[in-house]
Length: 98
Image (cartoon, rainbow, N blue to C red; front, side):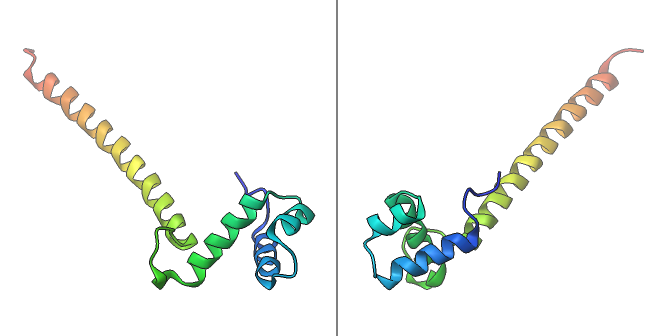
């Protein structure tokens, strides 16, 4: 599902917020988003701009990698389950008298 706001819109909103010409509440209202949404974008931009600062927030690249690893893990678990079932089926077939 695509993000409701394009990345360029988010970047520009963060730039405007960092300029400090308007309060976050007013800027968010002007942009048609919530203040918490704008604050989340700013926090994510801070994490992306300075990953060495530590903190609890993952960078965007780390989030993307984590999502890919979770998807791959799920796929491997399904493949492993299929192989277990196949092995059990063939083991049963070899045990039955002919």
